[in-house]
Length: 521
Image (cartoon, rainbow, N blue to C red):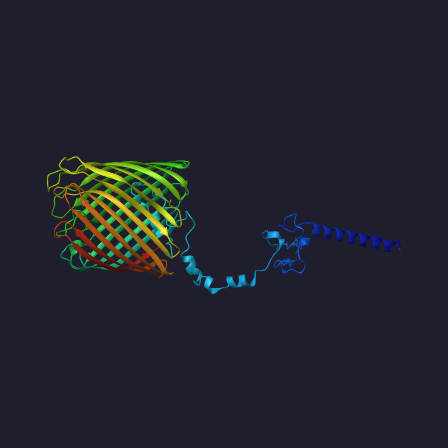
């Protein structure tokens, strides 16, 4: 009997403990439930009171939380908080809406992923040195990077702490007006454009080396064959977290375009060799950023049959400053001022006057940053002038419009807005310079994962100072690219140019159709 009594007392004690535990569970608010909510107010039999245990759990308590069991190495992470501690099944109409085919993207997962924007700041092409010439926003490659909708990025070749991006473009072209002349002459040409970029992949500092070639072979007019090249080195030195110094050295050798100012539509074309050295010092004071820049440019013309130096050879020295205030990484305002001096090696043979001059530029604008995935780049307006030392030459002055702005409308469509203003010299009798305005818009659209089309329009206007002459040019462009693989792209391009000038017998139209293959790594 004594043993029986002990067993009864022990079992009674266990029952009391169990009852106490049950009372604690009942009295304790469910996980995520407000303490002042009385569970007795809930209507009995309401489907919302049904507890849905988590799948795969060994057991649950009434709150829906799993029971932790010692030695259970498969215990899953704690689930997210549930509002009011009640798990409710979706209403039938809601569940049906989720499964509605009209609301589901029907593209394959790889097709969707191919056009997803990368995270802000991520750039597999490593464009890290872009502030070398803030007075010329067109040199900034990051807006075009956002504009270039492509299903694949080149991956490059890893060479230690550098990445090499090789590329070669092979194409054939048909030209309806080879010499950009009122008397059109047509011809075929084969073009080979090799390019190589070697870019550092460092946590601090940056270095980029680039080389490119432009080799063309015309079928009939061999005088238009080109043997151009580009050599470029860029560097960025991170002095402190807030200060960096960027610099560039460039040599470019190419045949002068037949549509350039003072270019001749008859006779042999000139080669233009340009050496450029530029640097920019940037320092950030919290939201305020100050940039100081300087540029030295030497331009030489080499025309067969004409002794050097050419009367268009000149050297330009330029310096400027830019101050910007950042409201957020994707929005800032800025003001910039630049000045230059240009020295020609000899007077113009047309009128015996020197084209030496000095100029100034004043701009203000808005920048949308370089990492945005919807809008990227900047736009500015201002005023500039180029004043000639020769009193007989009228100065060139006018409004400045600069833009390099990319807008990603959606994952499949993007736009690029560009604009630029140039103050150029001319050897035309009675005029020393030309004010040139250029503006254009391009669109790219992916019809499918591997097929991307493009269309663009660009207008140019030149106003000659000192004489009543204007020139206007309208260019229409269409393109199509088919990405066979990441490394091989077949493309075609068409361009129509309509040129009108107040100079007599200067109007012309031209068409160019090109088809080719681009290989890259």
